[in-house]
Image (cartoon, rainbow, N blue to C red):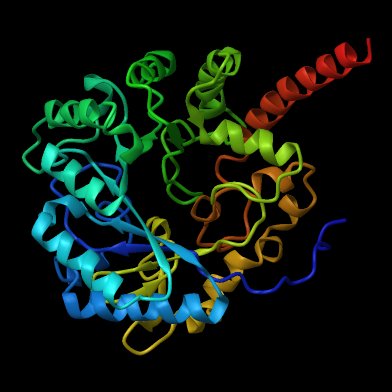
Length: 391
């Protein structure tokens, strides 16, 4: 019944650290949650993380890992655009963090717009066993609709050079996959076919970061419409029929896994505790950075690595809300039979000034349709396999 649910669980330690090593970017994407939305705190951040901050960050990560007996953690180089900082800086940063975190294995990851990903960068990634995810939205017309530089120029040629490097035999093991923001104007099958031609290890199709007070494109009116589910389901019909499936599409695989009883998934799905934290270039410890789309200061925990441990951050009300997801849900979500899969929708996309985050997602109708169709197909296959096995 509404209002009931699992008891408060034990606190989940942070296992991933999203580190804003750069606070500026060479692209001016018109949907960017850092630079184009409600929170403009990036303006007061230093352009890059200092080595003193990196050293303190390493020691805080080490402290947290020892306290929770974590053998390894993920360090994600983020921004802005981390590769703008140059390889000499990045080598020094990695060495500084490693030197100050001697008791935990650090797995190096990053997210890049690809415009400065070169053979030299790939050599650096091989040196540090570092993988980078690539942010892009599709072929040239699709990508350039939103992802231009500050002078309004296309950077697509550079991006395709990065794709060629990452999809090479040498580059594939250093490629984390593709992050693509959905644009309803783009043809879904053309977008998937383009990405498919480079055989990425994974694709994550992201719903635009809107909420109830700032509706995403296509959701300005009736929230019962399902344009994003319809867009994704065109791809699902093709992807699901591919045997074998060489590309992981995280959104589809998470739905199927949770339907089959999995308890872990990516951040946007399910009710598992969020186990990552964000560190800004000046050392501020913050909640998930996509909250910047909601209101100024939404990410702020009032903590900094020079004065606070990561264990202290675990006690913050904002972090606790993400750790105890069930207790942060609206009554509508608690009563829904799909909540174990959708988790109430991505946290920032639930926001309204009137109710805070205690709303269904602005994408609720899309999520419901997507989940029902995807799990319906999975159930059909399971039944067919069961019947064949009984013969």
